[in-house]
Length: 212
Image 1 (cartoon, helix red, strand yellow):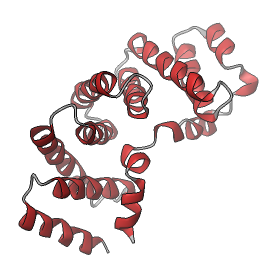
Image 2 (cartoon, one colour; image 1 turned 30 degrees about the vertical axis):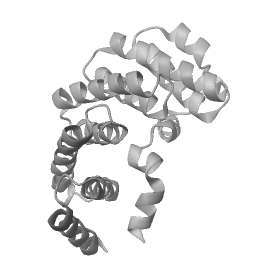
Image 3 (tube, one colour; image 1 turned 120 degrees about the vertical axis):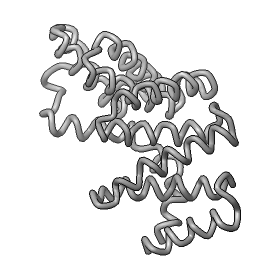
């Protein structure tokens, strides 16, 4: 099946051209599936695929197009996971700003990109910059779903964890009482559903069809 996907990708490039929308969609899907498989012997293929696809979508669709932003977001995830924070940060920052401008402050991709930017900032020791991003995510999810919703609770836990690291345990306790918080492993797992990779959240049906 994997060989079939690669052959299909080569056929699209040959018949349609590298900048054809169908070719770029296929390349994005392939890069996402390789990342999802988490095969170390294939991961070196993921970054170049996303890099080329993102550049092509910016060139052909424009930097603010929905598909360009989705590819940029997924590319930033790969860079972040690879530890390339000096490249991941400006990319996810650009994607987040464009999402706010074109999709709105409470759009799912805007919130996911804000969450990822906050994570990158925290990794680089800039917790004060991460705090307003996490507060915005929590506020938007609480407004959309209610404070008791799993997405809002996961966002509250992330913000409380950051506040605690910043020495503001009282604020963290008020936001997310200890009795309501799971252990770190459980809470970290619970925090993932609101911010799953964009291809799975927004192109899930297409990915499933590709995998048949």
